[in-house]
Image (cartoon, rainbow, N blue to C red; front, side, top):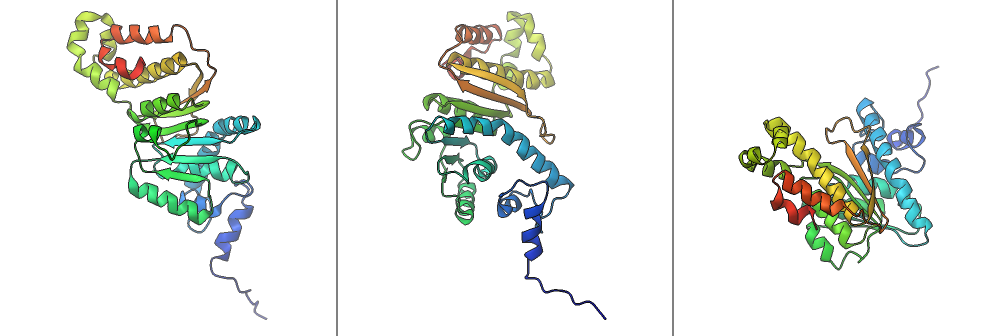
Length: 290
């Protein structure tokens, strides 16, 4: 006798299989993981999506303790994500950490209106009510009435070029407790090094470090992050600088985590001034030495 196949509702397999998938954490939103292309359309994990999921969890393990520390102190939690794009980071943090709690709001700040509209629609569809999205610049967001005067955590994941510096200024203005940065495309310092290259040859033998174009780019990127770290230390932050291991698809793999201690490093500002003078970068003083 032929076996009779049991009837299944359309799409049932795709909805149920991920819920018991050993690679997923309990309670994760399957719809969100599909939207972020971490799960395939039929709700499965292939080799590429499994790699993406590993990357998500790896980044989350750095940020989750910071969020837990803020909430453990008995207050609310506010997080501002700059250069949010599709708010990939914000949605993951909300889904894995804030969704099951009664407190905490995430603000996604992005200048591209179509991405902000998409994020608002997705948050409504997922019933993530404590996610807010603003289509404003970082400078505008600092003064926006839609954002609280104090923000606990500021993140900027692969915010290009000077957007990371703008996020730092936002964090300083809001007296953020934690700042989490993965810098990207640091071109400004390299462009000034390149512009002043001839004059620098007569100023310091260190100019040999950026004499060749590829060295200019790489040294400029490294120097940018050094200056950012000194700036944060000058404003009373203690830093951890490490690799964001797991993001193999990105050459920009530096992770900077800053904790506000209100104990400024005494010589940090002096160091910034000397570096800028030594490397003929005085015109960047207003960005880093403030």
